[in-house]
Image 1 (tube, rainbow, N blue to C red):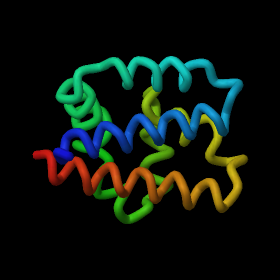
Image 2: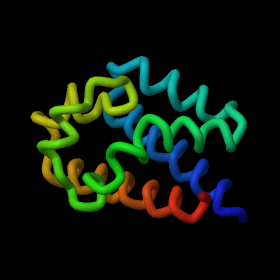
Image 3: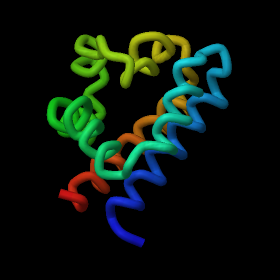
Length: 109
């Protein structure tokens, strides 16, 4: 499987997992559906532009404060809306998913 396909599969899986965790967030369900139908290169480009370029270093170091202060975009809904009430186990899971996505994105480049 290509690095791009691995990246896309992981991103889609992560968004579906978030949608299952937060069923009251229809945006997450829509995002998962759109991501599944999107061309892989477009999905990667969107992640790179909206997440990777600004936040990759802060994701790898789990710089929660930096991300929460700048998480004013729908792609970071989990940080703006749910982070403060999220269990520590779920936070750990989110960090792991984001770190994997950043590392996979580095391989796609």
